[in-house]
Length: 277
Ligand code: ATR
Image (tube, rainbow, N blue to C red):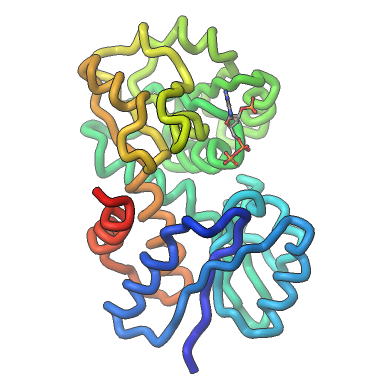
């Protein structure tokens, strides 16, 4: 029988995950289908019960359900528990286990773009939401020691770094404080949605003090080049968009479900084709 997989979110209509995963299933000869399910917040618990009853083998979880889903699952992987968010669920022994592949998906894409070792960088994360938490904890677990967090609401940045388990050196900053001290950072990561379609002219932070040899990464992939990346490139910085993270988190989810690693370049091409670029 065809294995059923999917993604739940609200909104979900523009998700690129179905195209990406269905293509990979087909290319790898796996008899499965991946479907986008529109689930409103009030229906989340019922939706998870229904998926369990129907034998859905695995699914992704996206905005706004990544944290809210946790009480409805049977087990939570330790990294997902530390992050406080789940983006991948698998049916194991009749129960659902929640994982988080966002952080590792981001870091694997980042490392493939960086020149030197990750641990040599002094990093600044912009934002303190779920995506920032996933990236912050995964970067620390991958050996980054110096990593500050700035956010519009500074208290949320303080809350994020207060849970730091490995003694990394972190400071919480307001956005103006981060802008003033921007020249201190060799790696800058935007985790907010600022600059995403349709508000493509917005910037999460002013780049006046950016180091010319910095590496600037934005988790947004629509547009492929945000204003932040465009301006950073204009100042001589190296840039990376959110496509490697999106594909990376999807590939890791696919591996959790099937035990097989899909073709990342093929996944990237599917998304690029869908974006029209
Ligand atoms: P996610 O889980 O996708 O990361 P989130 O938890 O809503 O989403 O977090 C969004 C992040 O973008 C937060 O850091 C948020 O800042 P606040 O904590 O101050 O809300 C940031 N953000 C969103 N819109 C913003 C804006 N217009 N200006 C500055 N920061 C913004």
